[in-house]
Image (cartoon, rainbow, N blue to C red):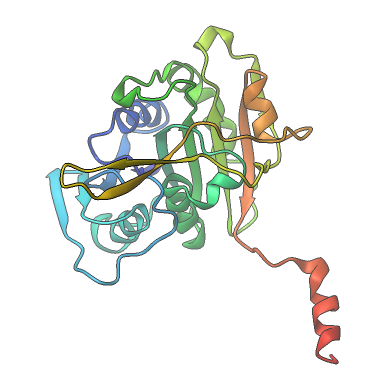
Length: 254
């Protein structure tokens, strides 16, 4: 089984090292193509206004001067000798839960794989303290990664869907199990905007990640993580709201 690894934290991220260790428990045919620098929050963006550069680090390890979407595109079109059987994106440093998946470069890399018809899984390690940088503990992902992935490798998956996995911010022995749950939704008021002044006296703003309030819903990824479970959520790329089609068509006399 050929597996492509990517992420949004960059080619040198600790989470990518964790992901490679997990993937090698499933296969020895591992390829890596990831952004050369961190691209957190890049979403499903594609680089169109500047050239994308590809750098080879060793026989099967490459980096791209672009987004996670660029990385998957380059891997499929320029790097791999044949399409992979599986794309794994992560392990992200931080949660990708609820509607935050729309911002996530980690999830978006898996989206690009799903659009190409390849089984794709995004993996994220939740943490509960800010300012940890590369010190984020990946204990739960390391210990549970293979156990989470093995059932997904051959599971029936509808075309143009992907799987979003989040590991809770606790030690491996504290994890209560795995829950297959739906996507939750945060309250609209999200995060904070930190204002400060640079050395030249100009104001600048930095988006903060703390203080995001959310409403727990029964059987959602938010609830699963808060209760100490690993969340596994199937996401679909068809965003059409079918229930509104007839109503809107009626507005145009259709």
